[in-house]
Structures are given as C-alpha cells and as structure tokens.
Length: 150
Image 1 (cartoon, rainbow, N blue to C red):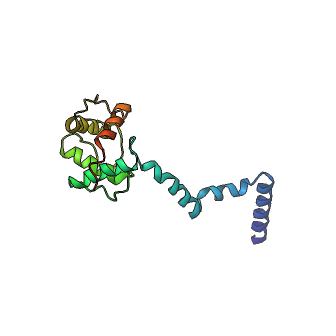
Image 2: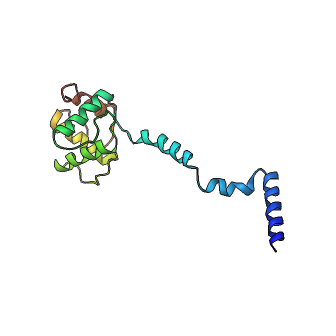
Image 3: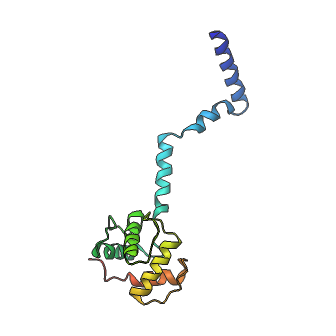
C-alpha cells in the first residue's frame, strides 16, 4: 500500500508540473511566507495616514494642538495615523461634534466633526457635508499654521 501511495504522489506531482505547477498551487497559495507578510504589512502601513492636505509640519501642529488640549495623539511625527485621529475623535466627541466609534478611521462622520470644529473654532463657514474637499482641506491647512507646535 505504501508503494502505491508513493507512486500515486509521484504521478500527481509529475502531472502537476506538466500542467504548470497546479499540484503545488494549493500549498503555495495557502500561507504566504513571513517575508511576504512583512512586505504586505509595510505596504499597508502608509495607507493608515490621512493628513487631509497637510504637510508634515502642519500635521505636527495638529498633533501638538491635540496634545496641548490633553488628547494624546501618540508620537508627534507629522503623520496623522490612527492614534492622531482617535485623539481627534475623542476631542470631537467631548465637544458633541461626534457620536461614532473611536476607531481612528477618517470617514464621513469624522470629517463632519472636523468641519463642525473648524467652523466653531476657526470661523471658516464650511458646508458640513462630510466631504473632505478642497475647502475643508484649505481650512484645516489654515487652522494648523505655525503657531501650535513647540
């Protein structure tokens, strides 16, 4: 029986190789190597940064502002990632501008809260529509001028 099993595996492997590697496709696709996983993670990381038109210096100003009003954005690095947006969502929630989950994702509700915040504290008179369009980005840029970060 063992000889028959070896022969069957050998024939299956030979057929798979002849057919373009179909016999090994299942195992090759089942679990990526750790190097592939690390590469995929490294590629995905920048997607979590949403600066909404701010350069690094102005994003640092927003992070410093959040820190200075006691909402910890994490590292002040000019990259508005999950921790920065969670801090902003907590601030927006405490101001009654936001009632969604604190998840650090910049979706429609976070943008609505940002627009309400900018209208209230920056007098920008934005349409509160949840769209991070040019006017919202310009107001966010202006609000984060060089006077916040020390």
